[in-house]
Image (tube, rainbow, N blue to C red; front, side, top):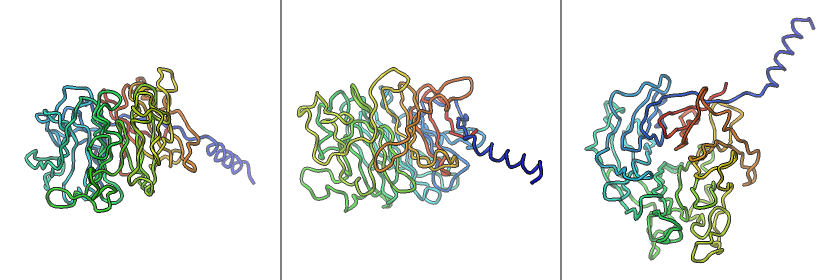
Length: 387
């Protein structure tokens, strides 16, 4: 082998031995309290960004240029009197590109959560007439915190809705373990009818006395960002804790139906001493796959922000669940092996923009190509990239 060939071969080996680095690039900024970013199926050149005060914007996915007008403006209907109130969730129908239908979850002026369907302009899917609104579901919020707000379509085409326990502390209304309330739940409804919605016949509590048939799973405190794994349909929850513990929950498709995640009898994986039946772990309850204790230290935080299992272009991240913390903005990832966390990594330092820091991680987002976005509540959207 000649000298040039040997040098070329050594160069290839050397490059292959260097692990690819990851970082972030800024996609767009100057938003007002953004809480979500994502794309409808089939539209790859635009991103949609939700602002908590009641506006949704389209953004060019490459240049970051924002639409001249909001995609939707319902500021007049949205209650922003508390930090956890507002326009909290957005879900595009799987056939949005054809139907223009999408769904929002917000708190109104009368302290009700509203699940509303809108239809975008069929001639311009970057615009929506607020008059197209159809209210599908409302339920009262007894307090100004723990409103949940996440929504998403599952692999089965049903709309799933995450709701908090109604707020205050220690679930004073005992909503967590009750199946006769919309609060502290993951709801599941069929929104395929032209008008309204139907309850799927295979929901676990259909036909049962003293049960709301829309309930699919229960026992969550404040599910702040959930997601489906786009490859296997597993479901993930970042459930915000109370005084001591933050948790990440995971269920397979077969475990999800009727699942009980334990609140308020459990906080994280331990008994909640403030529950009326302290130490009583509900039979069959799902324990978190990961918990972390409240701390201002580098390794921990105070308020989990759920994320996504990565299935994008960065091979070293494939199959890893990426999530973070809102108040002590950490970013972590791990693999799940035989239902146990493995290869846990802290990405906080490497996933920072050059010359600045991410301040408040209010949400993660997923693009059609599997790329993961980070939403900074102070107004910036980032994309995780390979450097």
